[in-house]
Image 1 (cartoon, helix red, strand yellow):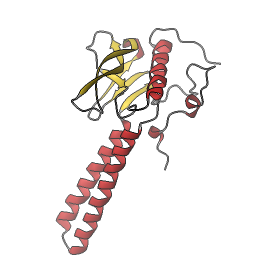
Image 2: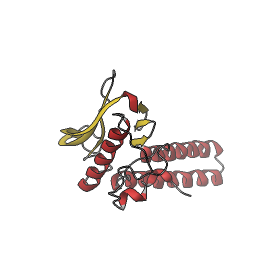
Image 3: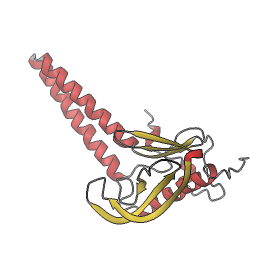
Image 4: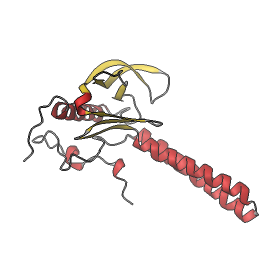
Amino acid sequence: MPLPFLTADRTFDEGADDVALPYENRDVWRRPYRPGPWRVGSAAVLLLLAAFVLLAATATVLAGGTGGAVVCALLALVIIVCALRLLRVGAWVSSRGLRRVGFLQTRTYPWNQVVSVRTIQQPVRLLGLPRTVQGQAVVLTPKRQSAPGALISDHSADFLSRPEGFERAADSLEVWADEYATGRRETVA
């Protein structure tokens, strides 16, 4: 079963320097980077936990307790949904705008509402925990709205111990913003 939210476009990873935005269909929402090992590992652990809970549901059904089995199955479903949502967290782009997907909420900023997307030095949260460390973050400056916080940071679950991946993702987000937000959209051949 293909999971398109787990992979970035292969052309970007192969280093297509001749094309600023190497995507053929720019109307599709895509994450311009791959999810990091911390994010994928956390989702895998959650899915493993869901498998054990489903095994418990099966054992409960075999023992004759249908009420407990239903509760276990619902708990497993919630864990699976959380694991999939965890994999979708990040910054997504298309020709229509920039989307900041969080665990509980998603906010879309149309390109005409984006003033800038830039990389700055600031305190960032380590793996999304309350502890902050000094690092880099890609921040969005929208028109007439409060700043949404960091889109991505070099200490997030996607980029911890992967500085080259962070630089590539930050550059990609900035190129998307330059292409669409500032109105300097070039025609694609």
